[in-house]
Image (cartoon, rainbow, N blue to C red):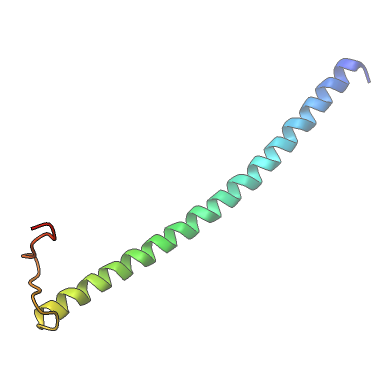
Length: 76
């Protein structure tokens, strides 16, 4: 094998190694993004549920001075 062929082989091995590393990285990042998507969906549902409970408590009179949609900002 000539020096030029060896250089090409080394370069090819380096590129294959980089591709394998990038494939692993992409898979890891994909798993992280999927998990974060599930977490965000779960948290959004929880926030909605808590907001609904707050409105229910306010409408039931359980929270004194609460009127949904007509609350003054704290700086007034």
